[in-house]
Image (tube, rainbow, N blue to C red; front, side, top):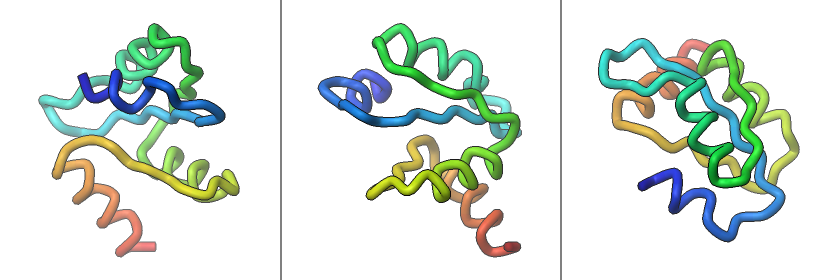
Length: 82
């Protein structure tokens, strides 16, 4: 349902998918496949850090990280240790 919301009517958006080490997390390939089924392009990244680096270097006006509170914690750890 969240992917429906994040892809509906959105243009010129680059989607990146990354897996995290959490038993309930969807794989990056599954996420990318679902996004592709909505007619949007999605690149699979080998790590969350790679996805964040690509997003931050993209020159986009806005970067949105969507997922769980666990994902937010992982993102915080990456930037805290940078």
